[in-house]
Amino acid sequence: MQKPLVDIVAIVISKPLLIGIYKNGKLIEKIEKEGMTSDVLPSLFDEILQKYEINSIIYSKGPGSFMAIKLAYVFFKTFEVAKKIKLLAADGFYFNKNMPIKAVGNSYFVKKEGIITLKKELEEGTFELPTELKITDFSEETEPLYILKAV
Image 1 (cartoon, one colour):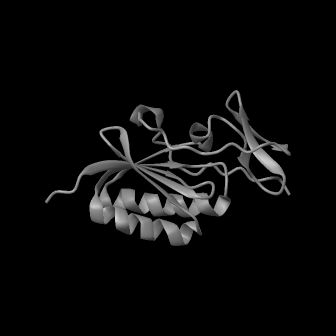
Image 2 (tube, helix red, strand yellow; image 1 turned 90 degrees about the vertical axis):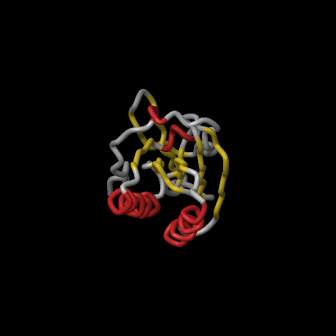
């Protein structure tokens, strides 16, 4: 029996890690998983690959957890190269209605007029998977969006 062809959305910049599975642009399965990105991603994708054939992976490329972004990028880039699965990305603000994203301590990333800055003591937005997937919303520029504070 042939596995269904799906697109995957992975929001890796916050906890819990969110994975959406989309068939014909519609969200058919949502997975939330707590834990370290390095532990969670391989086991989740092992389960996903047993049930589905992946057409594309879309991930949140930052800003957020530096280590989670780095690990996710290497993991998904490997899929792109080894399995010829298309990799796309969006910044995290796409998935949280442009609300602040937790940085370090009491700092938050904020995006205004396309510019990302750090602000203090804000209320963090929550991340949500889109119910419908528009591939044209996502970029082929998949390199991580690292924003580190100056030392």
